[in-house]
Amino acid sequence: MAAEPALERTRLTRTPAQGAAEARDPPLRIGLSARILHPEAAATLGFRDKTLQYLETSVAHWIMSHGALVLMVPTLEAGASLRRASVSLRDYVEALDGLVLQGGADLSPESYGETPRRAEWRGDRVRDLYEIDLLWEFVIHRKPVLGICRGAQLINVAFNGTLHQDIGTEVPGAATHVDRAAYDTLHHDVDFDPDSFLARLYGARRARVNSIHHQAVKRLGNGLVVEARSSPDGVVEAIRWTGGSFVIGLQWHPEFHPSLGEDFLDSGPIMAEFLGAARRRKLGLAEAAGG
Image 1 (spheres, rainbow, N blue to C red):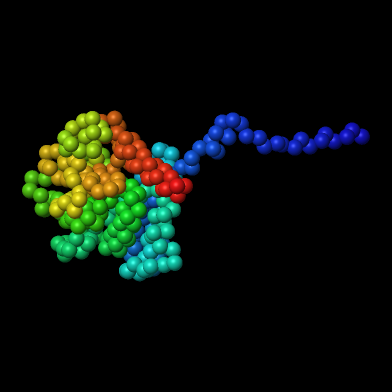
Image 2 (spheres, rainbow, N blue to C red; image 1 turned 90 degrees about the horizontal axis):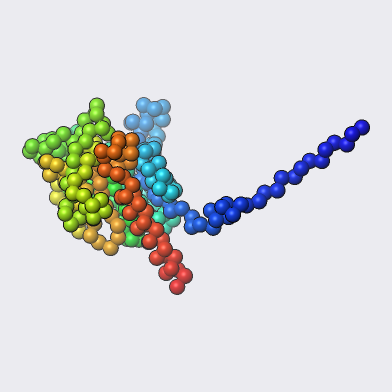
């Protein structure tokens, strides 16, 4: 009877390329603020008396496509109020390298000292409080923040600015900035301020962006400057903090631009700048710890 062939034991070995990959610096960890579905809306999906928190895939993939990890930061929320828990927002900030404030529901006018002029403009006060806390923790730790659409408006309000509750009724002669049917394909041009960060970054004065918002910056927050305005109506489309860390807000959705064609502003440079700021801050912290 012939002997059975001996089983061959597989040896795991690392190629030079694999070894180099393992030796590289770990990817940056970017926090993404949560969108919130409160119980009334969640109930329509079968989640009775539950709150759902989620992220939009395009923004997560946009960040990931630049080699960073994305971690959604859940709220510390119970019912209609915020509570402090054994795990705090500060713990998240210390574990992360940067923050992206994603788009979503309106800000509540109550967050900038006004009363909603219409019921449908009452916004999400719970999310406002959560994101303002989160933003300031990153600012205190001098870690970069990028705000998108609602996120740009949140930055302005956090720095004591105000918003137009509705562009169409508050800004005479304004262009259309939101169209539910067109959604992300609705677009307009923006003009960069000649001395702005964005003008230097792109080497241009004008660019095409999408437009999915009916609120906008009204009174500029403390320490903020306007980076871009829509053409031709002058609505604020980008803001930047002039303080000690990278904080910038874009009224458009750069994460949608890659699928909209070459006519739209390239979303790569702004993400590269944001991640570069995160990497420099991380390196600085590491050097300080080693010193």
